[in-house]
Every structure is written in structure tokens, then in C-alpha cells.
Image 1 (cartoon, rainbow over the protein chains, first blue to last red):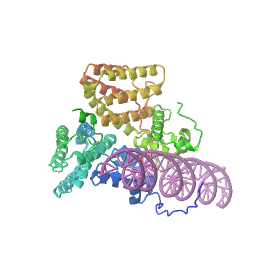
Image 2: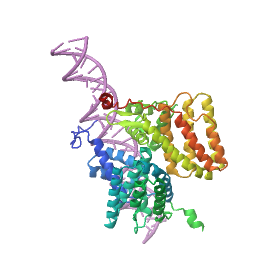
Image 3: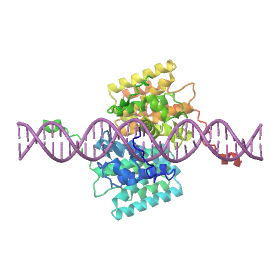
Image 4: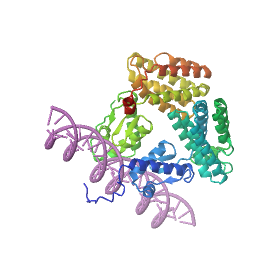
Length: 240
Length: 240
DNA sequence: ACACCGACCATTGTATACAGGAAGGAGAGC
DNA sequence: GCTCTCCTTCCTGTATACAATGGTCGGTGT
């Protein structure tokens, strides 16, 4: 069946078992690019291009793309390839409702378990976030905000819920990219610092209430208009 | 059961178009087999064997296996292949804590939104579950129990959280397989019927409390022993 | 006889080759 | 001049071939 006797085409890849780590690194690269809005919602992700950029074959790229699709960061349309997910208004609402329920629900346990190291790490993230915002680097700030919320969730000790929160934060970044006003993106105020204060003092209930207000504030800052591009409802348009 | 459709092995098996649906069907087949405990935790899943059974090539099987790994139904060890996940005691606790938080939190909204059709569908599932339990078909009963909880979550209207609940229920089936006592598996009593009653009467708070007790009862029925097979901690063993 | 070492086999990981469908462009007809 | 259709071209979906690795079994030496 092999018509052509292909020479072992340059196994420049086959160093050793770094394959898994390489894939992980590529996954993070693409994730970060999406979360930092360097890849905007709707952007198409061609397999060939990504394969060439990262120096692997399409096989590995496909695997990563599928994982990203499961995480709902990219959308995989059957014969059209992959593109960065453009969240709908409904999805945005679901995501923020879910964050309300889970992140707020986690706060008491977090307040109970938080350690000095955790506090330091969180303060570091919050500080860098403020600096990024001050410097106008919204990409970095958004990524750090997601990192803050994700890290917070992991302190609860429940890896399953923390993973879920992390994914919700990633999706939130996407939502900010679509529905956010360029003006005051992310968590500008001292919210994160204040939250750390409540947690440090072990005030779980207050932290919970504060987180609720915090998330509501973010959601309220979005301009969620229906965005009727995808499937323009001709009936509604012409029936009036 | 009859998913083994021996194809004529012609070269036309890649008749695309049905590819996506085929993959979906295979995914469901394997998922069901795991949830119904026909594939027990720890069972190895060789790619060749699955490829032959379902009449597709290893490429498609790999894709499905990776998706199952993302859903944490199978574990993918780097050079050793795939096997049905054997949940640890910690994971079991996390899963049930997560269900406590999310499923209970969803109940008020479910009580608000539930429709007559929903009630009928839920009653049907609960009835079939009881019948299966009476007939001693624990596999079917476990699957129906997961279906009940999943369906319930979808009524809330929050697709994101419902999806998460669905996945938690699948993982719960796995946990039951490892830590459950053969005696009283699943939700034996009239719990599901009672819950439907509360929801029908719009008593969200009561439904929430009842769901909490229900989940606690299931968790309490497990015998969670540490199961130190996976990575026997030699340091701890020999340091004494 | 037991233990260690080497080779083989089984199974996964990766790349490439091939086929089929969808989007865009060009040509022809009205 | 505009539009419709066909063709080309790119891109994804799938299978297969090849490389690498870990486990296992058998042989040999002490």
C-alpha cells in the first residue's frame, strides 16, 4: 500500500517523552491567548497554521482543539473547523449565575481553611492585577483576575468545584471580550483586596456576601445586548 | 446491547456524514457501559479492541477516549492506555459536596419553573427506577437515578450548571461501583417520588432541604475506606 | 535453584497520506 | 450589468503506517 518509500522525515520532534508536556504547553499558550483577548471571539483557528506555529503535526493540534472545545473556549463546527467561542447572552447569564452559586458557596470554607501562604499568594496576584490595570494592560489584568478567582476556589480543598470555577472564569473572560465595555473592564476597584481582608479575619459570611456583590457588579457592568448576528430571525424582522 | 454491528469491512466504512453521530453513539455506548457497571472501575480499555468492536479506526476511538477522560469517567495514563476511573475517597467526598451545593441550590429555581411535562417525565423515570430495583436490575436503576437527577437539573434552565450536575451524577455512579454496598444501592426509598411531590406543590425550600437529606443519605450509605492500592505510600509504611 | 539481564511482543503516540465537503471565484446566460 | 451555476481550491475528517516504550518471558550465569 505504501507507494512511496518515505524516508524517516526528520524526527526533530522525537526528542523523548516531552510530548505530553509539549501538548500541555501548547494548550496553555492557546488558552492564554484566548483569555487575554489576543485571539478574539469568532477568530478561526486553522489546524495547519497552529501545527506549523508550534512545530507539531495536525494530530496533536486536533487533540488540543478538542480539549479546548470541551472546555468551551473554542467552538468546533463540523466541517468548518475551530473558532474562538462567541458566548451568547444566555450563556453569559448562566455562567454568572453559576459563579454566584459556587463561588459564594465556597467562601465560608475558604475562610476556614485559608493559610498565610495563600493570603500572600492572593495579595501578590491582586497587586499585580492593580498594576496591570494602572498600566493599561487589560489583557494581563483579565488573566490575573481569572487566576485570582481560580486560586481562591482551590483553597476550599474541593478540587472538583475548583476546577469548575476555573473553567467558569475562563469563560467569563470570553464574555468580557464580547459584552464588556472597554471603559472599566475587570474588577477595577479594591474588591479583591477587600475580599482578602474578610478572609484573613475569618469572616466567611461577610466574604460570601461581598463576593456576591462583586460578581453582581461585574455582571451589571456588561452590556448584554442580544447580538442577533448568528441567526437573524427573519420572521421577527419582517413581521412587524 | 446490540451495538456490535459487524460491518462488511469494506473500505466504505468512512462514509462520512454519519461520522459525528457515530462517534456520539459510541461515546454513549461506552458511557452507559461504565455507568451501568458493565465496565468496572479499573477495567482496561484497549484502543484496538474498541476500534474493532465498533468498526471504526483507532483515531476515532482515541478522540472518544479523550473526551471520556475529560469527563473523568476514564483515566488516561501516559503509556499504559485507558482504564475506567477508580475514584479515590477524596474525590468521592468532593463529588458529593459539589452535588450538595449545586443540586440543592438549584431546587428553588426548579420548583419555580417545573412544568406538567417535566413532572410527567420525572414520574416516568422514577417509576421505571423503582421497577428496575424491584426486578433486581441494579445497573438499570443506577442509570435511571443518574438520569433523574440530571433531568431535574436541566429544568432549572441553567445549561451550564445542569451539565455539571450530569457529570457529577456519572461520577457518582462510578463511586457507587467502588464504595457502594451491594445491599441497598441507589435511591431505594420513595425519595424521588417525594421530591417530585414537593416540586409539584412549588415548595422550593422543602425540596431543597429534602434533596440535602437525600444526598446525605446516599453518601452515608457508602463505605468509604481509604483503599490504599493505587500508590502505597512506602515512606509511611516503612518509616514506622 | 534463584536472580538478573536481554530480547520480544503488545500497545500507545505521532505523522502522513488520502478523500470528501464547503466556500469563493470565474464564466456564461439572461 | 447582474446573477446563477460550476469548478477549483482549501481545509477538515479518517485511516493507516511507523516509531517508541513498557511489560513480560525466557535464557544464562552463579
